[in-house]
Length: 117
Length: 110
Image 1: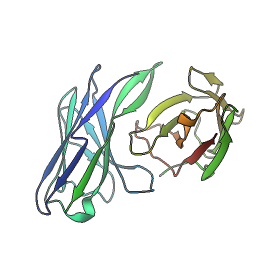
Image 2: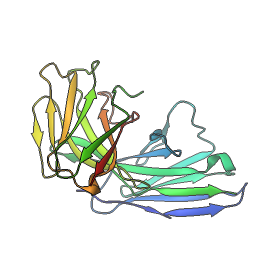
Image 3: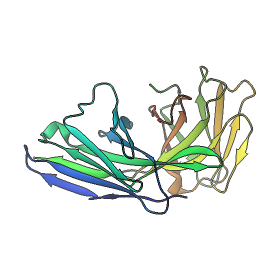
């Protein structure tokens, strides 16, 4: 299957700082990528849809000024958590859309665990 | 919002078949059913998807009822490494966003 990577795998930062997470599709070009957040013992929550060369589309309740998304190329999307606070501590997961048997299927990265102190 | 309902947890003996049910009674005619699983602290792993016909690959089989209101994921010979949370997802037709439900936590018992 298609491979998606994320960097870093885990990050610890101080409250008030910004953190950038990278998502890369390694062996295919992804015009659409997605960002999710997952709190402990909960399911994945879709945050935003990232389209190459255009502005991201955010889900209701997700602050676009706090979670900046950039999709500058067909293989890279970045999520920047600005002015992070302890409540932003979570597991952030990206996915990339890939056609499988003529149907768009999402392949997920391994996730980034963010801890804000 | 997720359009699927799954039991919160299930157990399965190692070596036996694991049958995971999913209810998607409001599915539209052009929506696909996808199955993913998430092993602890990892990203979800694609398993299989289908529209209306039964599907099989090297990981699992997907059985979709004729009315498409429910489906079953079958792991033919469960191993301890199959212990994970299994998500059944119906893809909305207007885009390719996935909305995850609560999933089924499968525990394979030695």
